[in-house]
Image 1: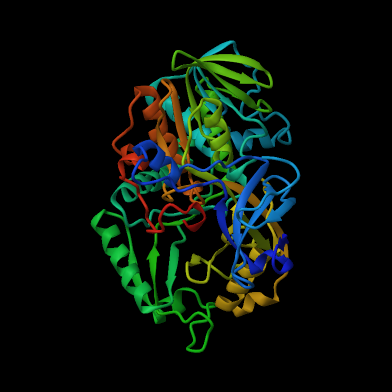
Image 2: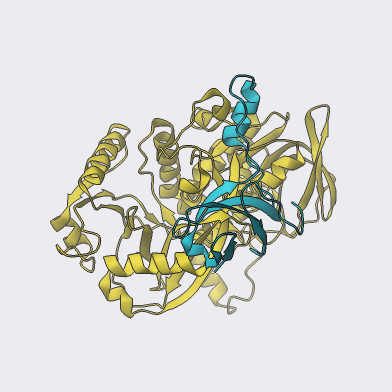
Length: 92
Length: 418
């Protein structure tokens, strides 16, 4: 069981959260974006074996998005923050 | 290769089965091969087998970082089916199904293919409509499909709760009678033995750590057992497709997720078909040993861990017990997880890559096992002729750029949703 520290609600079990995905995906400006950049935005994810920054949503709690830094091999949660916040600890 | 038969069995019985030869060699890697296949699971071994058998390419090595079939080949729930709606999928999986039908004879290895039928349960009116539509599409594509009403389902699966007040009311179901299960390890072993007999080198405990290129063309691989040159390299590694492709500078539309499965204690035969419920998120069958084998959804987050967490186990077990109340008396014996490479449209990639001589077979989501023979067959064709077969043209890497995605479920570019 993953325990995710919601910045607003405190530590809660994973079953209160929905997984959103890669936290590094940024929607490009559709007016200036190239085709390749748009394709990458839609389809390409970092998918690292190791440290991964990802978004979860606390759907059975405050419904806020939470940024989680997690190891995809050990499932260890290194830290959490608000989506625009900074997480200390091992970098991706 | 010693042919397995009633006569070889009898002959070896005279000396207590002490003189059976090894089913395949364990050679040292050569300095150079025509083709290197990365990944010694069912898909990689089938590819090597068909390269030798269909295309006469025998200077081939299969490199496996662990042991044969130790990845997802040995972790799936062994279900074989071809009940797909979309054109590209239907023809490809039906080719695979036809190969399953003759596999034991072709490989001279009993893969215990059991055509016990695969039944998808419909729990709502829209599902009834969708299943009938898919059944019609399958029949138009020459694939067997039968729509069953609730009474017919109750007769086929007596233990299923088809009453009016069950948690998941059963309105009907789509049966593919030729679907079923096969012994997953035997598939890897059978293809390994067949490939080895045709000259393929199968090299275990040999992890690929780099893919060497020169001027946009593959020249070989770096491994934990030294560098090996190759004219062509095929990747068939399931969960680690992203990492292998990155070694060659190729980005793939894939996320790796963990999928769990589990078995109950063994009991007497009580379930003679494969029952699946997309709405309740579970699928269940009974193995020849008597264990009930079941699985469900992904854990839902990126993972390379080959193990999952408890909420999904609880969810799957709850679904199974709702459908089959009698099974609530059983104890769970084992659970495990496999790392699956979820593609962005839920369909696999069997294609050339932007690097000359590098070929990709991946993105199988959680449907790779049933595709094993067909996947090897078309991947061998793609590698040998440097162009895809008509059956895998639709599984190109470019489809994400051109918009020709093959999204069977209509879930959109959310890998965890397929």
